[in-house]
Structures are given as structure tokens and as C-alpha cells.
Length: 257
Image (tube, rainbow, N blue to C red; front, side):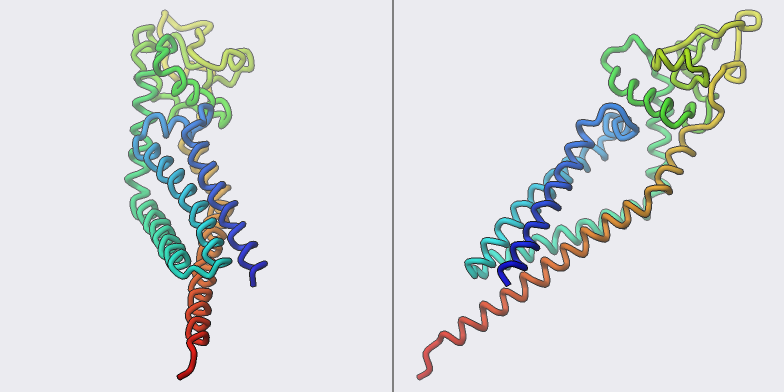
């Protein structure tokens, strides 16, 4: 039994470390779409802190649960069971919120990216990390804008230059991608003006690429979430079983009159 206890609670240490690491990665990532979200959306940053808290709590509960099981301390096992149940319920609630609010989240996401594009300024060092992250997304997915390159026409700098420049990270030319950020100059603008259709950029918006990435990785995400839930359920079942065993042993030790 002790071997089973050690193995299961070791899994919880690993699980807690993974959740903790994922939360830290969201906060530390500076070169992906996650960076765009966490630097623009307070809700994702809050979610990252919650993940860090849940990960640390899971690791602590794994230690306390193991201590309670080995030393047959019922209160620790009860605390372990209660915390596991709360964590599992919180995960289910978060999944339901995401599922039922996905359209709202999609609109919020679109607003974040559109505002980023409109305010994009290569000389603004305060937003350098955020802008570099979006350039990275456009380069890696080979896309331009959220729904298309036309959104870049609303950028104040490009508008003031009559759209004779375009975002380098949108370009379909390798020489522009060497720069990877900021604006590139259009070769031959007609009468000193241009539109997005004159730019040598990708036609696909990044929204399609991001949605495709989510679809491609949905199986992995669901698998990980299911695995986490199963481990938590096993921990709850084991802890309640150990509590009952300890309770039964206490009664057997009572001297008969």
C-alpha cells in the first residue's frame, strides 16, 4: 500500500510542478501569441497567477497527503481530499466558463489585436516586447493582421505615409523577413500612395491560423486535462479509502470490556 501511496503522491508533485511551470511560462513568454495575450489582457495574466497558485498548492497537498498516509493522520488526509475536490471543481468551472464564453473571448481577442495593430509604433520602446511578439506571430503563421492585411491601413504611421510602407513581418519576401519587425518601404507606389492590395504581404489573417492551431492541438489539450482530472480523482479515492481504513483500525484497537 505504501508503494502505491508514494507513486500516486509523486505523480501529484510532478502534476503540481507542470501546472506551476505552465503558469510561469505564460508570464515569462515574450515571443509568441501567448505573449500578445498576457501583455494585453488582464484576464490571462490573472489566469497565469491562478495556475501558479494551483500548481504550488497541488505540490503542497501532495506532500501533506503523503505525510498523512504514511503516518496515518486523518486530518491531513481529509484536508488533502478537500483541497483536491476544490481544485477539481475550479477546473470544471473554468472549462465551463471558457466553453460558454468562447464567443465573448473571441471578440475580446480580436479587439486586443486590432488595437495593437492600430497603435503599432516601432520607435515605442515601452511596447517593444508586445510588438515583437505580434511580429513573431505574423512571421511564424505567415499571416497579416487579425482578419487580413487591410487592418494595417488603420495604423496611424502607415496612414500618414499614404500606405507606402507596410509591416515587414507580414511580408512574403525573404529579404523583408530578415528585418522581422517595423515597416518596410514599398518599391514603386503609384503617385506616392498605395493600399494594402499593393503590399507584398500574406493575404491570410492570423485569426484563421490561430484557430487552426487550436484545432490541431485540441486533442492534446483535452488529453492533458483528462489525465489531470483522472489523477485528481484517484487521489481523492485513495485518500478517502485510507481515512476509512485508519478509522476502522482505531475501532479494532479499542479494548473489549
